[in-house]
Length: 532
Image 1 (cartoon, rainbow, N blue to C red):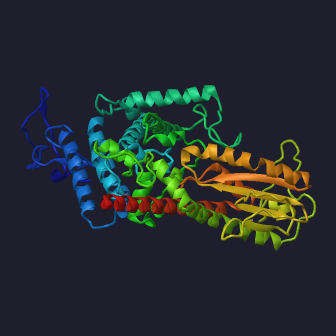
Image 2: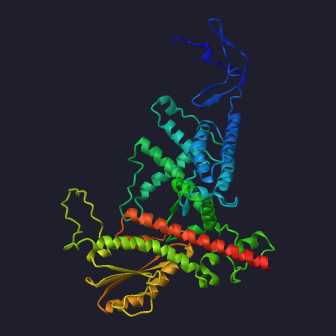
Image 3: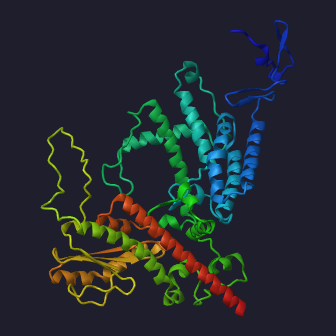
């Protein structure tokens, strides 16, 4: 191997300062760092021996990249894609290899968030938690630069500490990240939390059944698994901080109180199919940033907070779910029927399939006995899970749509009109469901109210020899699905794919209906203002 002076660099330090001294080899002079900076593994080494200029260059790269994306002429949703898969990977390596203070990264993230809000069509007052939180009820896959910076530093630290090279492992370089946050302290805290979790043992979180979550413990994990566990723990700490801040926000943090509402994940593929006005309405309505009279009275002192339609306090909750004028004019009923029609179509399709099949003889769904130490055989058949409809094949469906509502008179005489009634004369079983499209904070109240309303009808059906069951189910007026709707569709025997497509279509119908109600309110408000 031949030694090449052109590909070499020299560096001379005297008492901590650079000295202008040249080395020669075979009559050729070796360039110094001052003359020709060198780049190794994506990191530049210059005469100042500092990363200050590199940090400034990275910040400039972000500004220029954001401006280039913003001036590209693409729709905002495609600009988000360019940010996630174009600009973010380019800036993560410089942030990983250079000594960057956390305060500089936070400034970079603020610049990024300004453009993200602009592309989503939301005001700059929207909290950054709404963009980056993974536990928010409205979730969008936009990564937090601060979180990715911390994760990259922690992963690098774990990689160096677990290196197979004893020199690197015993003398681990100090990864500096400013005084606000230290990498070594973050790693130690994450490891301590993981050891504490192992001491506590398996705990139940969420609505999953017991034993469905597999836990990986620190003591039995490999080096690679420990590195990923520490990285995941750092992410969880960042998410805990975001949720804690959101819980203290009276308006934009209301989603933390929605116990019965499932998370709505908006992937980039789904985002591509949405119109810009729909994207803007979805985010502004979720975080109550629409120009309602209640908000305008806070933003401008001279504005009134009264609803233009009825004179009551014009909050977003009032306009979308509690305005007497909108109720009497049929706006809420129209939205309710649009959502109900989606669910009824799915139920009718399932009922038609059940009626075309033979009634199973006996109980086909049982738990087989297993000897000690034996493993259950995997069921490769295409049988559907048991449902309420499995007991008969003469089911009839009646929905309160297009004037066809009403309870079947052969079962009971009542003035109540459930939204969906499904009954079978052969099995003498009746199932009725009731849909509500309330404000998301009132979903539990709506469930209890509908359950109480139909309790007497359920008892009357039982007295007449019918097996009856009532299932109230809800879908928020802004398109957030309640757990009760999943339960209803699951009881009807729909597959996971069918449930997913049905709930998505129903959520879009509720969201579109609320957007129409909001636009109608704006038109009425402008008309009354022009008449003055």
